[in-house]
Amino acid sequence: MAAINVFSAENLSKRYGERLLFEGLTFGLSRGQKCAIVAKNGTGKTTLLNGICDVEPMDNGRVSMDAGIQWSYLPQDPEYDGNQTILDHLYASDMAAVKAMRTYVAAAEGSDDDTLQSAYEGMDIHNAWDFEARAKEVLGRLNLHNLSRTMATLSGGERRRIALARVLIEEPDILFLDEPTNHLDLDMIQWLERYLAQSKMTILMITHDRYFLENVCDTILELDGQTLHKYKGNYSYYLEKREERKENALANRAKARGIFKRELEWIRSTPSARTGKSKSRIERFYEIKNAAKKRLEEDDMALRLNPHRLGGKIIELHKVAHGFGGDVLFENLTHHFKRGERIGIVGRNGSGKSTLLDLITQGDAPLRGKVVVGETVVFGHYHQSGAQFPEGQRIIEAVYEIAEFMPLEKGLKITATQLLERFLFPRSAHHQLISTLSGGERKRLHLLQVLMANPNFLILDEPTNDLDIYTLQILEEFLFDFPGCLILVSHDRYFMDRLVEHIWVLGTQNEVRFFPGNYSQYRLALTDEKRQAQDLREANKATSESNAESASPKNDYSKRLSFKEKFEFEQLEDKMTELEHEKASLTEQLYANPADQAKLQVLGEKLHEVTTALEEAENRWLELSERAG
Image (tube, rainbow, N blue to C red; front, side, top):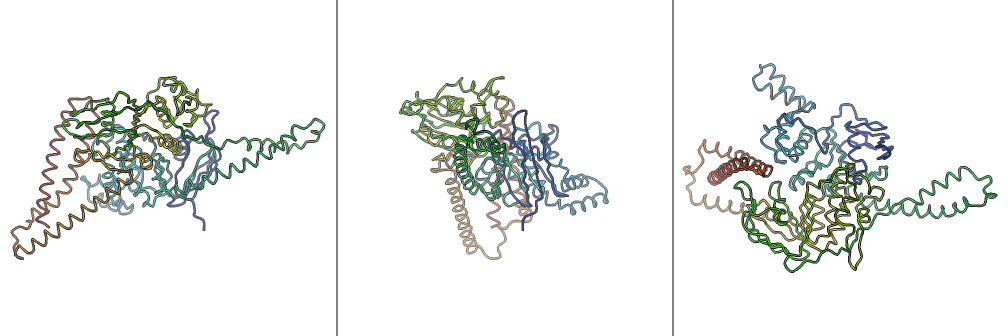
């Protein structure tokens, strides 16, 4: 029995001037289905979602949903009222459960008994009690605290996480997501992946995170050449079936070329022979001609690069330490880079990943220690903020200002024009204004500028943000054969697994921890560490309990917790969590205001107070927990 659609899109079309993005797109979603749209940047993925969610009109077609269906949309650039607090923004939805929660909160602040009773019943009717519990979980996982702050005071990443939190808390019937993993650290991404996979919501998303596609989605919609192809399976299934589709298309084109050759001879026949030619056969000839000339192959990125030679001394880090406002991010970092070394850097947002990259490239000086860079090192540093292109500059001009060609092995070279084509900029677009490009296309062009400088030491800070999966595959192949050193900061786990051989972990007790292997191997090692630590704690607890039972009289209550101490013990865990969140928030604010020395001083002093209070609370908790044991 076929599943019944709760959402349907019929005959959707969109054109910008002469450029056709898509035409006649028709598809539907059944209840609980989790679907992703994949396509190259600039082909209309976000435009399609905006059309579905009535953010911008479609040229043709219609969208329909079942009666009573509630839906929410996370766009790439969410709108917000700068004067609203985070809490007001989270409760601004028109959904019934959110309204009931808002009414109940207001009624609890001094309304009469009848109003409060009505609000209480509204909470029951709309299951709004679950809303509060869900809000606490989501906000905690996304590291969002101090909800009295106004939206205008937040960073772009914080506002994006708040927008994500809002749609997750609402838990609508249908959820539309445009790049939900942007501005999330790796722990947040893995939590979100589990959360959405277990959710009963119907989901339609755009994402470049391939592990996300693999573990969350059960359907892939590929937008290719203005046509939508549907694959009933996850990312692995999609790759397999897409390859089959490409092979079939190549076979069909080869067949069309054979027919075209015969029909071409017929169409070129002498005028006397052309008398009485069938009009339908002539029309059919042009259809065959289009099929025979269809371009299907994708460019091979297997380039054997020939970057500047690295000398014996590359980069040396000697007991490097850095931090802000009295708070140390990392210290005693010592490492001598070797030829061909590939390192991935991970850590929570605010742990100092971008700061460390600036120290390595000598864009900033460490608090202590020193960084020594060899004379032969040529950096290629891709910043996650992207590049600023001059007004009116064209694509080809942005590449030519770096170099007109890049040297390859054996004296060969690749021109800027050829490399642009390899990075999915067709020759017809080379003189296009950069201002007309999508965000992902501009990021791709900035990356190309970095590579055209022919570096021998590549440093890539979040290069995968806003790139489509096709560009990611191209970039992976390019970097896989890169013969120089590579440092990579990325929230794309698939990308990290493919390219790095060692992991540096920031944010753990002011030290940089070293793990051999890729990201998945690091996570496995971390899981083993946690399991061993838990086993040790349980063993120590059992030993302690056994010793205490044999050493103390059974009726000796002198060391047990008093009622007051029990109450204190129960409150301490919440207090420690609150202090940890406050510490994380203060640390994030320190990074957001590097030039404001007065504010840094105030924030640093406050951070010291909070850190001291947290240590005291932890010590007291340990003391009481031993006695409560």
